Each structure stands twice: as structure tokens, then as C-alpha cells.
Image 1 (cartoon, rainbow, N blue to C red):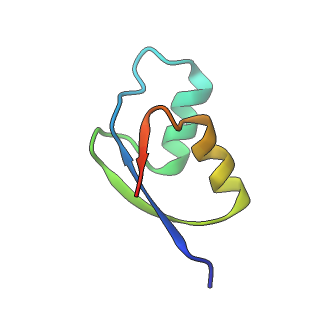
Image 2: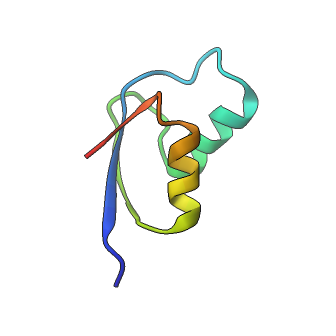
Image 3: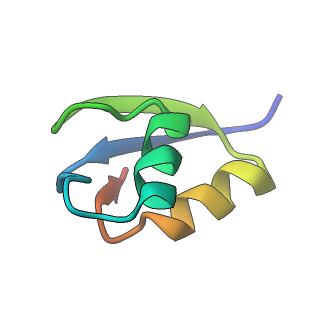
Length: 58
């Protein structure tokens, strides 16, 4: 079983381009301070890298 990554949305996606907002939605982050746990896969890590300036990684 792969380990997990915990993400928290700390900055809003309002005013960002459509791809950034869709990436946040794909990660399951819709509201500020929401925390999700995701599997550590290459696809998820790529999505996190795209929105790293909006999320906090625990």
C-alpha cells in the first residue's frame, strides 16, 4: 500500500486560471482550510506541484 500525503488549501483559487482551479477541484480542495489525504502517486504529485503555492503539505 502506498503512503499518503495530507494537503490543506491555504490560499484561494479565485482569480487564478481555469487549469489551476480544475486541478484544485481534482485534488478535492474546494474550500479554504479543507484538508484531504491522497495516495502518493506520480499523478497526484504532479498535480500538487502545479498548485504548490496554494496548498500546505503535511
